[in-house]
Amino acid sequence: MKYILIALIFCSLFSCKTLQKTTTNLNSVKWISGSENCKENKDPLIQVVRYNENTFILRQNKCTNYEAPFLYLFLGDKKALLMDTGATEDSVKFPLYSTVKNIISQWEKNTKNSIDLIVAHTHAHGDHIAGDGQFKNKIRTEIVGLNVSDVSAYFDLKNWPLQNGQIDLGNRIVEIIPIPGHQLASIAVYDYATKILLSGDSFYPGRLYIRDWTANKLSMQRLVDFASAHKVSYFLGNHIEMTNTSGKDYSTGTTYQPAEHILPLTFKDLKELNNALKMAGNTPKYEVHNSFIISPK
Ligand SMILES: [Zn+2]
Ligand SMILES: [Zn+2]
Image (cartoon, rainbow, N blue to C red; front, top):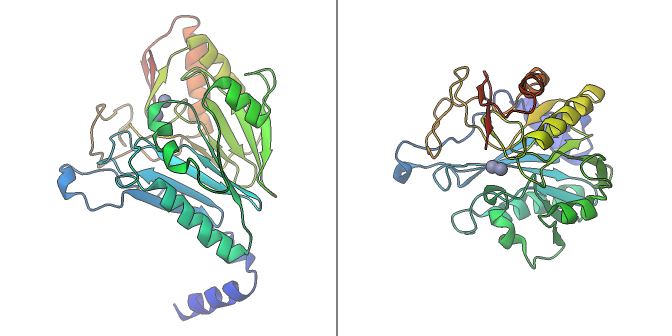
């Protein structure tokens, strides 16, 4: 304990690479996952997990909204990027702006830097954009629009969905990969610093609802191609609906998931999804896999 304390004091005075570079093992994080009786739920409204000094993962409380989406915050030297704003508008039930603001203020204090905030979305479904209003008319804050044209313009995505775009947060490049299929404006996000690949609702441990079968099939192939060419530390989506028993999911709307699947999926899972989509050809097919369920809409 004494040595950790000395190290922490040393690290706050000088830059200490080893301690600051510690990352959280996302395969063993215990997420808040609701309660049998929500009236007795004592969990925070938003759980904040620090992945490293400039990367944070937030989860909304299931008792506020059963979708309990995950949200991601990446901080660069000039800009912070928040991916998604959750499933609830109300800043009392879901204090997203103040939570994000606190993280940024703390970071600004530590780094003696001041940064702008970009609020963008993995896609335009209600459970990913409901908190947008909390960020409106706030200083140094920009909200990216929800349509394909808004997303393309902001991230300079030419020839949607075939070409990727990049954004520089200040010594931190993030790649934007269009993956329509679950929703028209779905994107994946790859962070070159942490090598985290976010895949929104298109690939996560749950029911993969596919609206546009053909577009989704092409998108998943492009995601496989991208992941083959880049090192990926974690494949992360925006929900957990699977249990930790292979092929078994929780029912839609449940507010209690005591034995959830872990948040990360693997490249093996992504290739399994891609192969299943290819095998099904042009006919949308419902299929239960160990860590996800293909659910055509
Ligand atoms: Zn969705
Ligand atoms: Zn969703």
